[in-house]
Image (cartoon, rainbow, N blue to C red; front, side, top):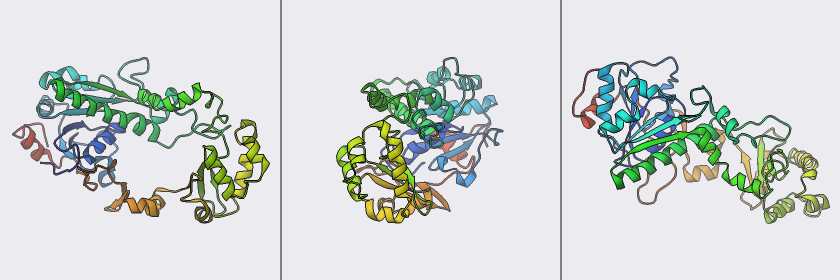
Length: 376
């Protein structure tokens, strides 16, 4: 049986192998102690991204190999469904139904099942069956709009805003809410998690600012996408730093530390969008005069709202990140440790990455009681 620790210990999750946010959701649940069983194909498919020992998104899971194109393989999965709390899948709408593993069939076998579905466009709507990726989903939902400098094409961190933020995290919240309800009522349900839904929902804070006329449809004129005091800058050594002194008191402190507190240009027009391009150029010239390390020595740890912009390796080695033990390097693979943290039921360290079909016999013996035909 799974020996994972954490607040979700005892929760059984069946994950149908796929790519993108659904596997990340499975990893998150496994990180927090759930027994996540990954249903892999017997052989990699044409669209599989088989990272092998580098597949951090599969850490902590157990893998079984099943032929889902055979009746025996489908029946094997249905037997596992009878023994689990949650199923998560990230196929295009209709694929699970064609396999004989759609929600109606699965809920008939296990009425308490929470059936989590992860897609980009959603289970219905004009675009439901179209291909797409993170950048397309957040482009349509509005979440990409403010990601980029004025006058430049919007660009967001790859996969983070859509696949992870608007996708995997909403799927995780949805299935856990479904589990709570199922335990109270004895009835499971389908969770339709779509990246366009989740990434649009993530916009609500900005939409509130927009309604209050602090954010605008014209990029570069809002508190969080245009001012000189909410940007990243290149330093003398080619490295980058970030400043985010939004509130007046933090802005004043930043100016003091930069020796600009008495400069009327900054004090008088700091919140005038018409002044931002010129002040941004002046900030850029100033930050280019010292190295990142020098700016860190002056600003880091203060209320000026400052941080260096680090690559993942440098982030792992940063004193604050190291003190909190945020990253680990396991078998040569850099990965972030489980989050968030729990006082009474802490999650264990990152667990191993399974080989395809590694746990087939063990899982089927535990969950079903025997090893049927149609498996590895």
